[in-house]
Length: 162
Image (cartoon, rainbow, N blue to C red; front, side):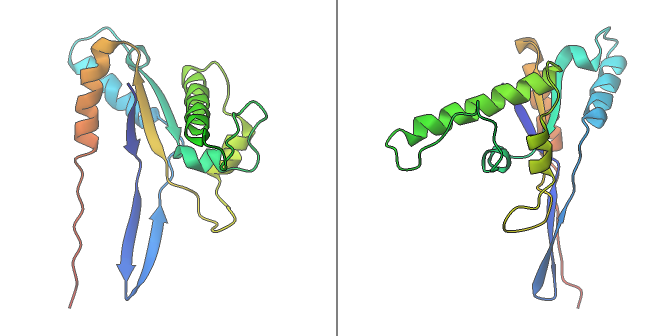
């Protein structure tokens, strides 16, 4: 089970044109701090790193559409009748890579960092990011679901002045 939280992109309409504001968070320290405080208040002797693996990543397509994918990344032949299976293999490869990064087994590869910096062929904005939490034990899944419910319950409202 993986929990994913959008760290937020906001579209603000200003006089018939739109401005996109992307906020980028490259650290999971605030999530760890929240979990740690909740554990402390509950009297638990656990720490935040005992409960979840933490990571901040872009959507998978930001990485997989990168021209500099490593050689060990499964390829997708878009003309193949097996392309769905090939895409699934590519997605699994990336999810396994992200888990290795979250576990601290490896550092984030440079090609991922470059993909997160933006500057694609069609825009120069940094892509939005998601906080990803993976419970280290099934007994922590409900805790993760409650955090997800809290962080996903944010709403926004807009209005017109005049």
